[in-house]
Length: 97
Image (cartoon, rainbow, N blue to C red):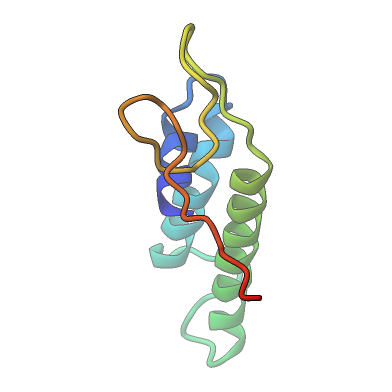
């Protein structure tokens, strides 16, 4: 998921606001200006937690739904490790008889 996230962020076809939503949630979390001030015990922290968790949910869903586009002449990025010839390096499972 980490590698896929970095490819998502670097894709020029993805809208900037989608890329910045996680960063904006973290800024809201550390900002002293909130919808509900943090000096109010529990309730002040819950709004920060809600914003960060909603942004994390949004980013995970976006990255999972994202289908990368491949440069011309290259196979589409599918998240699998590949060898020098471009073949996927995925171990095959053997069935025991």
